[in-house]
Image (cartoon, rainbow, N blue to C red):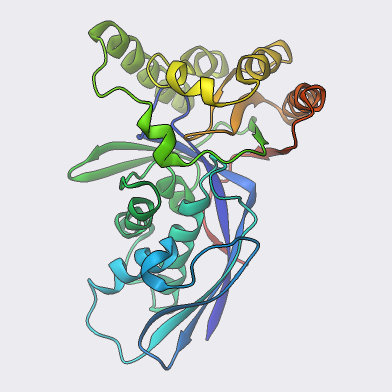
Length: 306
């Protein structure tokens, strides 16, 4: 018995929501096959498209799956996982989250869904801990739940899913350099000024309110990062120019996707999103820097069975 899954890419942080906000992309993602096997435990039997460890304890999908199985009565069978990577590691669009979310979702389905999608987040977070040293949920939550997600609290884990306004589109450009999440975290300061914090939480509230009221202009005004972007943007080639270009071509807002180096822009309507994609492409063409680009509506479902 096996199932084939689409494991979506995600955009985390969304400028103002470091470690607490994320959204799910619709047409960028990995594929995964999860099957029951006679051999107990979890084995990763195949990885195509990336040079990643097959050892269960060294692979994010394996670690997430083991975290989930540890909470269940011992089974007299096990699971095999095949991973077909299309999201590059270190791209800033949730490569490790897609694998972690896919593994726990697939096993949960084959077990008859003992856990809800929201329950699965805590297990997928263990894969993120292996990848970045930090069990954050801002990618795995939207990957599992779809739409936008807000992590209100980590202890206890409290996640709110928010529907996306229908005409909201994301454009994401990935300059072909790898930026490890752990490296991007190392440049951050542990303390922020009260003034910056006030600005930031005002924007988080504004963004959430904008999503609920479908107020595109408010969403745009709220996509501002006072704390993390100034420190991380220097690691990303052409960042300022890409962001400026996105605004000039109709973006509501723009910023670093996850820990980078991908840069996202949100816009109203696919036509604008496509226009932004072309303009972003032109910047990297002139810089002679290889890149990948995605234009996507917001995926309302998260991980899905193919």
